[in-house]
Image 1 (tube, rainbow, N blue to C red):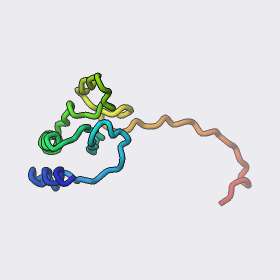
Image 2 (image 1 turned 180 degrees about the horizontal axis):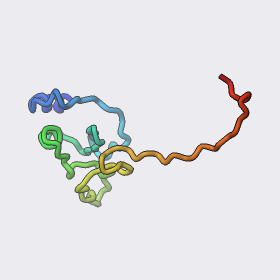
Image 3 (image 1 turned 45 degrees about the horizontal axis):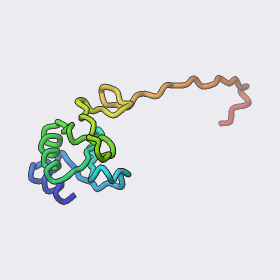
Length: 118
């Protein structure tokens, strides 16, 4: 956290970037992880070298570093999948907003005027 905060300060990004500690991500085998919002963009195996590059490219120039994206737990003897070229979380529209929920028709009930309670 301290190194990340120092890097944000060094790049003079304090007005654009806020650093907050997070809770458990439930995948310790992926090494230290980082989530960047808006997005979210998930990074794994974050170390000082990766933090410097993420800060320089993603924070300062709005270019997420695809090769550091979280790709699931590392399985011994099996390499990670290739990074996704266009990272967009599942279920999001092209403009980044959540899809609108389908409106289910409400059942129509008929009441006499006396049935209403005001």
